[in-house]
Figure 1 (spheres, rainbow, N blue to C red):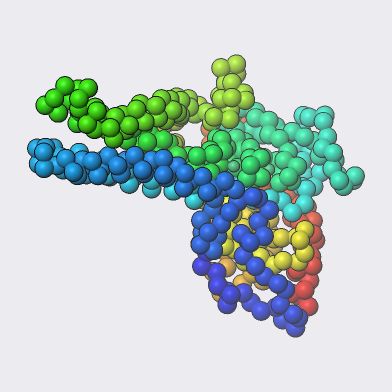
Figure 2 (cartoon, helix red, strand yellow; figure 1 turned 120 degrees about the vertical axis):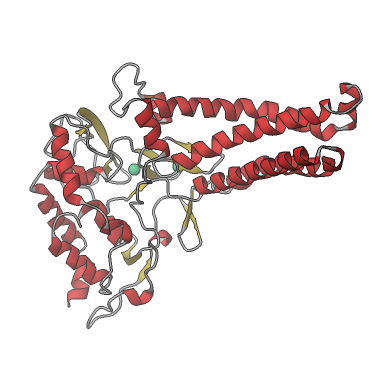
Length: 416
Ligand SMILES: [Zn+2]
Ligand SMILES: [Zn+2]
């Protein structure tokens, strides 16, 4: 990903080059980007520095203390405690950074609302979206099938799409996020389908680190040959570390236990607070073993947005990318794909990596099976506007056509 260079683009024939820019530069969410769009943070991403300090400062103080005490301690014991402490700190900060700097599973926005007739299936809502376009009539919610259950998904006015099941719109980042868990202010990022694993690793490593520093700081005091009170008055730093870890462990430990419960029952924080599955059945719960496997051993869902994608900037209301096409158009007609390739490059490898390895037929099939009540659908896999198109059969093509026309300015310019 991200390997598209300027020369990847076929120069438009007989007309001026339309202005091109990287998608992250014109992204409508409130994310902050670093390293040319490779690192994606939430708008409060700077809080990662505070978290790094709150973890790193006491942990490194502990390591320095152990280092200074090594001559007084058993050689092996002293070194092992020091090295394990250092490794735990390092891992914790790595998990923090991986959670914070990764796309949590942002659902690409639509540049225009989906066609109303493409939503004609599975509609149950009698409420209609108040759209700026009066001719547009879209229901606010829509029923989709997940694992044999009917799940109601909502229309997102901001992203102009029906949210995939389990997705929610983060008001802080201003994006719809797949398997939205919550927006973590300590990490400064949404926690979603793509960074939940590193998040739980971060939280649990923090807990282990807390317990570790607490235990060995206490042991350091108890090992002093004098009375504990005297040892405490001589070693204020260890006392501070003990108190600090004692307070912190309630927070991170509680969070770890809570998330382990959520993982075992296959819930998100958002679902737990909002819906309460105890009142109705959770369609995602597959039993503890499978739930644990899903979080810890499944492949990370590919990003739906390539923020380094080159996009053609027509005006401030129109931004399109090949990745966005994944969300809407590419799936249906080869002709359309070619059209898009025509815009975005003829180097023989114009599609982003994420788009090439997808078995769209498989998705289609699994959806069909699903209607028969079989467990097959990966509910995070694609934006719902896609689903609705699958569900609506031929309307996919219609939608495709209108989508093309809405981007007519760019394609026309290139055809000329
Ligand atoms: Zn949204
Ligand atoms: Zn967020």
